[in-house]
Amino acid sequence: MLIYQCFFENILHNLHKYAIIGLVSFYKSMYSEMLYRNQKEDYGMNLADRKVELERELASVKREMKSCNHEWGETKYDPKTVKEPYGYKLVGQGSDTWFEPEGYRDVEKKRWSQTCKKCGDKRYTEQTRPTGFEPTF
Ligand SMILES: [Zn+2]
Image (cartoon, rainbow, N blue to C red):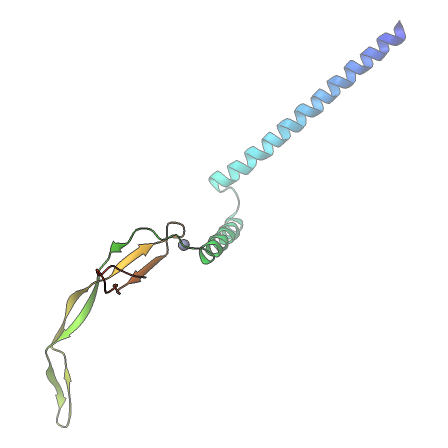
């Protein structure tokens, strides 16, 4: 009887031990997760580490942008303003004279744009199809 009792006590003791080990490892992983999150949230890491992390993230974003198989959004009328010269005036002295425009004025040029839904890249066109004058890229 005593042997059995010892046997069961031993099992109980071991179970207790394993329960504690389990609990400790559980709290340990919770704690390290908390530490990690804290670091990420209030930037507890030093600035050099943070710089390295941001540079890595930037490189990864740049890679993604570079390999984007663009998905162009809707076409928008997106005119551009260009400076156009007007008039002529003679400048210079003696035999060293030349003509220059009197001034420049803003002229609106027809243009259309599309923006990629994935990477935000923008493409422009000033060309239109002869039939119906639809913008073409
Ligand atoms: Zn894209």
